[in-house]
Image (cartoon, rainbow, N blue to C red; front, top):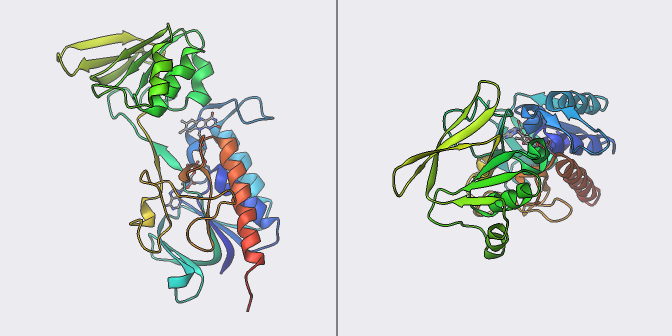
Amino acid sequence: NFDMLIVGGGPAGASAAIYAARKGIKTGIAAERFGGQVADTLAIENFISVKATEGPKLVSSLESHVRDYDVDIMQGQQAAKLTPASESQSGLVEITLTNGAVLKSRSVLLATGARWRELGVPGEQEYRGKGVAYCPHCDGPLFKGKPVAVIGGGNSGVEAAIDLAGITSHVTLLEFGETLRADDVLVRKLKSLPNVKIITSAQTTEVHGDGEKVTGLRYTNRETNIEHSVALAGVFVQIGLIPNSEWLGEPSGNAVKRTRYGEIETNSKGETSVPGVFAAGDVTTAPYKQIIVAMGSGASAALGAFDYLMRQETD
Ligand code: FAD
C-alpha cells in the first residue's frame, strides 16, 4: 500500500512524486506514458532557467530526477476507476487499472493531464510541430512577423488571435459557426486590431505545406460552398482542450467533482471533493496550461496531500 499514489507521469505527476518522496512517505506513480504531453513537444523555451530545450530531453531529465528518489514508477499502466476510501473495503483510496490490478493508497493525486482537440483534416498530423500548433504561449514567438491562422472562435481562439496579432504579421481567425462564441469584450478587442481578419461559417478542410512546413490552409465557406485558400506560416488549432478525466466515470454521487468540461475542481491545496484525493496540472480547473504551472500545482497538491496525511489517525 502507498501513502501517496500519483496517477499520471507528466510534469505535474513528476513534480508531485519528488515532493512526496522527499517527505519519506511511500510514493508510487502509475502512468500510461512518462512525460505526458511534454514527450510530444519539440522546442520548449519557457521553462524558466532552461533557455531552450526539447520535449524528449526534458522528459528524460524529469524521469532521472524522479528516479533519484524512492518512487515506485509503474509505466504503461492505465487507471480505469477510482474508489473513494469511504466506499472501499480496505478503507484506502483504490485505483483499479485496466489490467485488473488494484492499487491502494492513503492518498491519491490525480495528474492525468489533457489533450488538445484536433481538427482531423489532412495535413494536420503531417505538419504538427512544423507549423501546426496548439499552444500560443508556447509557439507564438516562432511565428514572429509571419502570417498565421487561428481556428476556433471561442474564448481560447479569440484570446490566441489577440495574443498572436501582437507577435505575427497577420492573423486570420476561422470560426465554423455563424458568429464568434467568445465573450463580447474579447470580440470587441479582436475587431479593433488592424492585422486581424475574421471569417465565420468557415470549415477548414486541409492544412497544406511544402513537405517541410505549413504554407497555408483551405476552407469551405459553409454558406456559399465555395472553397478558399489562405497562405500562412502557421495554424493554431484552438477548438478545445479535453481533460483526461473520463475514466473517473459519471460525475455524480461520491465521485470526484468536475466542471461540465470535465476539469477536476480543486482548491489552492489541490484538494478535490473526495477526502484524500488531490489533483494537479492540466486535468484540473487551474488556468493556464503550461509545464511550469503544472509542476507548481503538482508541488502544491503533494504538500496538500502530505498535510492531509499528517492529520489522519494511524493504526
Ligand atoms: P500531461 O503532460 O498531459 O501528463 C499526463 C500524464 O497522465 C501522462 O503521463 C499520461 O500518460 C498520464 N495519463 C493520462 N490518463 C491516464 C490514465 N487513465 N491512467 C494513467 N495515466 C494516465 N507547455 C509549456 O510550458 N511550454 C511549451 O513549450 C509547451 N509546448 C507544448 C506543445 C505541445 C504540442 C503540447 C501538446 C503541449 C505543450 N505545452 C507546453 C503544455 C504542457 O505540455 C502541459 O501543460 C503539461 O504537460 C501538463 O502537464 P500535466 O502533468 O498536467 O499533464
